[in-house]
Length: 301
Image (cartoon, rainbow, N blue to C red; front, side):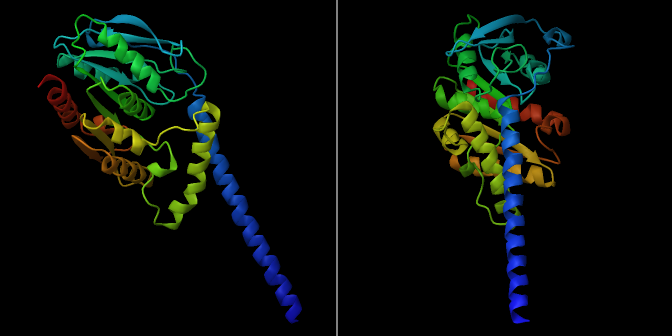
């Protein structure tokens, strides 16, 4: 009787451990799949709108990156000698960020909207994070006669928010940056894990990280905490979701963690009731006021 009980306990323990390992492998695989979607994004066609729909004059531009890719975009000339690079999120293109370009243009800023590599009409099949694209965009702006090269900033959303942070960290001549909805790049970008569910998602986050590093070959990629620290002392403004759901809470926690790693002039705004990159839709007047005030202080004064 005792032997039979021990045998069943062993079987139960084996089954439980096997179930936990299987669940961990599945969670890792889901994270890996998400990483692949970021590296190999589905393209959205350039469709239905241009800056002309916002009564803005613009030029079609083609910009070459240091690794010989051609990026397509629109350039809206400046009236105040300052310009902003605007970068879209994963799977998007320059059309998605036209409303923000219109805001900045109304306040006199030149605006360069680009399709990041492997997006829109730009070259590339692999998105190896777009910091090279941001540097190429800044080089383009520095050669425009309507721009003071010391008055260039960047604004990015989600994946584009990561791209502008990394681009500014690599290019010391870009004077200021706003990132809305940036996420983690390396495991250390997540705040300390205190709950059991946070530790369980470590397998998902690991799968996501490893898929990106393997597919891009950038094994030595800096974390976002290292990136924001490298931006100092230039002004930095992080915007995050502030809704009560779990995904928004994670985004807010990550951006708080990044904010703590940054130095110099820095701001953090978790937009109340907003989910990922919907801050402008939730608080349009306050959103415009804050981003314009930030760039005015950083680039004009």
